[in-house]
Image 1 (cartoon, each protein chain N blue to C red):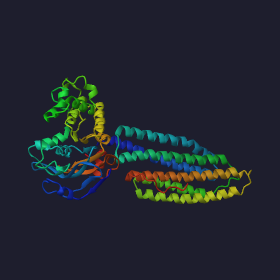
Image 2 (image 1 turned 90 degrees about the vertical axis):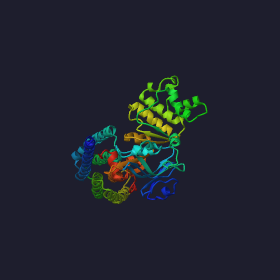
Image 3 (image 1 turned 90 degrees about the horizontal axis):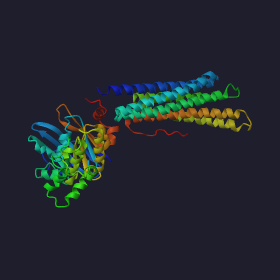
Length: 285
Length: 224
């Protein structure tokens, strides 16, 4: 697991659907199978630039953590991966996020299809006010799933480590579950549409320590099958669950930039950048 | 700043390492002085003082483990604390080597046939120099000093080699029932203790380098 840093911009330029002129920046390449390749990804909200030229590789079937202080752009970056920023009227993105040869940020890309393949779990559990079964079955039904829905619901709940707790109360409202169970239900709901990538935005910040550990265990299990990208303020959580960690930091201009990216073990024991060291040891801010 | 408690705790631990190192350094000096002057009282004091060295080591370990549990350090903080745990182990063992020399002094007593090797004091001086430099390298995060200190181990080894050969030659010339047999064997052990002190100083240098670079590397592997 090595990270090669280079200043090449050839990959970005050659990718289909590149938007705007890519700027030269450090590219953090990984020497393993990739789920996503980001090249010079920038995000603007109106005239304000929220992210500047992020270039890194996201490894397939690994957990990648995005860390950094509030306002550094990590959630903005996460929302690029499934075009959630499209829902913000003033948002504009440039650069390339290559996902199986396709630029996620390209105009021709079907954002709804991307969101099916790149699922998302939010900070606060947000089950639909429906039964547990209906929550999980919702996505497949909308997508016109023709197979055995019962089996899919069970498999999704099992993968989300929730089946044993809810198999005999499937008709109960999802809102009746505890916070930790609701979050696992949301994960089951995300899994049910059979995504490749699962995005998690502070998935355990509203949960108690036991429920948090369950979610963290689940993330490790899910990484055997899915690529997981998680935003977290909890650095111990990032250290516990992730394979790779990206540290973002906003400058005085409030624009977020990638400071350091690498194997989580390296980031938390021997970070190469002083700003990373200062942040993870609590010297920053 | 949220690091106040952590910085205070870590500062206390590094201060304690410095004190432990000074104490161990004195134990070596006292053991060698006791050997030079055949001062049994001083030798006994070194032996008795080793318990306090051990207690100091465990107190530092306990403080560091507590700090790790409560503050969950990472990066250079983590490396420093892990290094301290390793260094106090080496210091405690150096204390044991000093105690070993003091016990040899007690064993030899005031036996007039117990002819010492002058080179032992040369070894001790070099080993003490290594110990002091190693601790300075750790405290000052000085990789260059750590590496040059490790180089001194070759000099200690060279003196040890000379002492060892000479003592073996002395042994070879003795009749089987000679009283001096035990004396020479114990002097051999004393020289071995000094050689090991230099090795342990090298270990401390390796931790000083690890603290700065994050790399664990074995430097200048001793011939013994």
